[in-house]
Amino acid sequence: MAWIVLVVSGVLETVWASALSRSAGLTRLVPSLVFGIALVLSMAGLAYALRTLPVGTGYAVWVGIGAVGTAAFGMAVLGEPVTTARLLCLLLIVGGVVGLKFLH
Image (cartoon, rainbow, N blue to C red; front, top):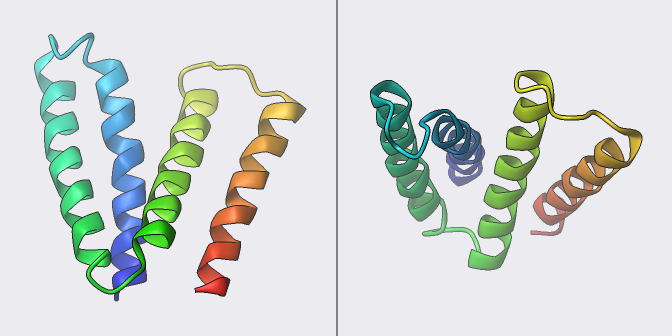
């Protein structure tokens, strides 16, 4: 259960980071509300998962999911450049996250 909550929390990290980007410095109401709600839920899920998972593994997986998700959102929705080098780096992050899961 902790792994499922951790993955959902990592996805919520992508949501809050993307909403923060869209909030124009927390001056737009809807993205600011999405940011705040997703941030609280993401942190609560991380805290729950860390009750049973090692902090180093849990935090690294959470950050990895959030980083890859946010970068993918930026490329898919915000028009950020999609390059072979960027995709390779994201694959390296995914490989590290998967490795941490299996080495746990």
